[in-house]
Image 1: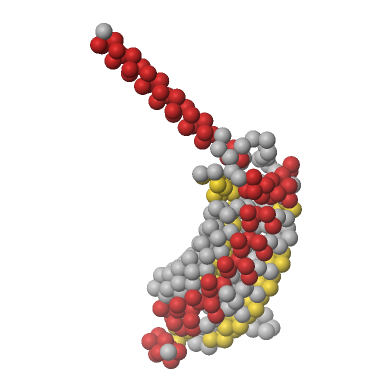
Image 2 (image 1 turned 120 degrees about the horizontal axis):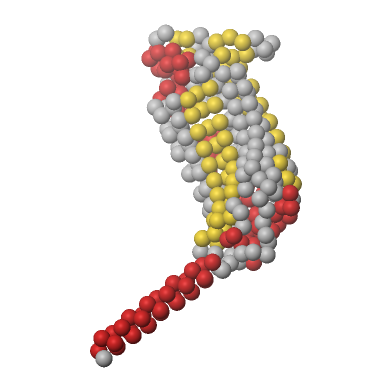
Amino acid sequence: MYLFYISINQTIMKATITLLVTLFFSATMFAEVTLLEKNALVSLNKATNGEQWITKWNLNNPVNTWFGVKVIDDKVVAIDLSNNNLSGTLPQELSNLKSLQTLNLFKNNIEGSLPTTIGELKSLQVLDVSFNKLSGSLPSEITSMISLKEIHLFMNNLSGELPSTIGALKNLQILSLYNNDFSGVLPESLYNLKSLRVLQLNSNKFSGELSSLVSNLVALESLSLFDNKMNGQVPLNLEKLSNLTEMNISYNNFKGLVSRKLAKKDMLSLTMVDQYGVASTLKVEMDKDKAVASEE
């Protein structure tokens, strides 16, 4: 009788555990984001012609089953719709995704400008809308996105100057804006980005000088300013950037002497073009130490 009683208890316990596990996974499966976040996603779907996407959303199903949407604790934390034939524009309602950490819309056909409300995404760490058809300027509101680590906006039609407050993005590690129509001088606050590892501004219309403050970018590993309209002396204290392994600042209007070490770092050996489009390499200062000292 005693053994029979133990057997019944064990059976009841197993059944209870099975029921609890089933209820947990059922609750997880049918967990739903807030109506505000769901509506933000629906707005994205409609604004970018969701019916034409390669992989479409069934808006009648739970949000956590929608392609490219990652939900944790009933909050949308990531959207990856790269190469999915999105067209149209980005809706203002994206700002309602307060927990969003990654927005990846790489290689689509999105037009229009970045909505100014994007600055309300304080949790966003990765913004990738590269290889689209965006136009207009980079909204200054983007510099209030204090969690940003990566900005990928290359291969678009963006124009105008960089926001003067871009240095507020203290956590930024990658700024990739190549192949656009950005212009103007590089803002001084840019040189405050001490976490920046990759700076790709090539094939734009940037002008003015590269400040000697570039030596503040102590984490910089890759620097590309190729094919712009920058001028003045090449800052010789670029040599102080010990982590810099890739550099291309050729096809600008830089002038003056450079060190042999800097010339070797540049992929095109510091080839510049003059006002007539004639290309020539900068002269190398043989006494490297003297060249650096002269700038300091």
